[in-house]
Length: 148
Image (cartoon, rainbow, N blue to C red; front, side, top):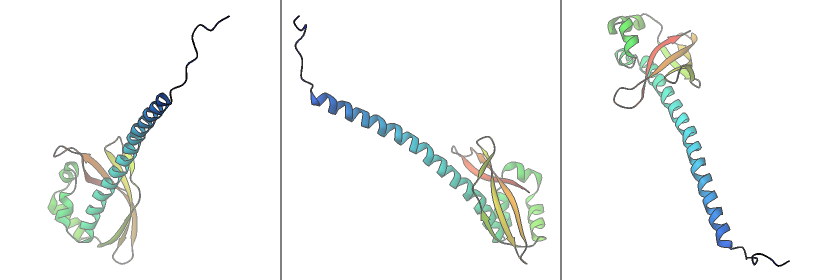
């Protein structure tokens, strides 16, 4: 019985083209996945930076500046004068150490574990609550209290 069609040679260009397309698909998908992880790391850094700036302002006794770094809800609970007076009557914060932020409520509220060292050798562990705010078009981060 004769062949219905003559056998053809395989064209190496087709296989090279398919390989290039497969490489581009992997590159694009891999770049998207890497971008998601990169954004998560960037966001974690921004959250930690907000807590760090707040605590550095307290260490430098820049209480009015630290007050303004807080979210609206925290400022509504205590006036700037009350905030400054309260901190003036407490031992002075000398240093702090932050740990990795963790989600507290949803995607916009995080807690940043902190160890605080006070004048006189006292230490205290607490969580700094950091919230996302959309003021100015992008997401910014503000301290909104502490727990612990």
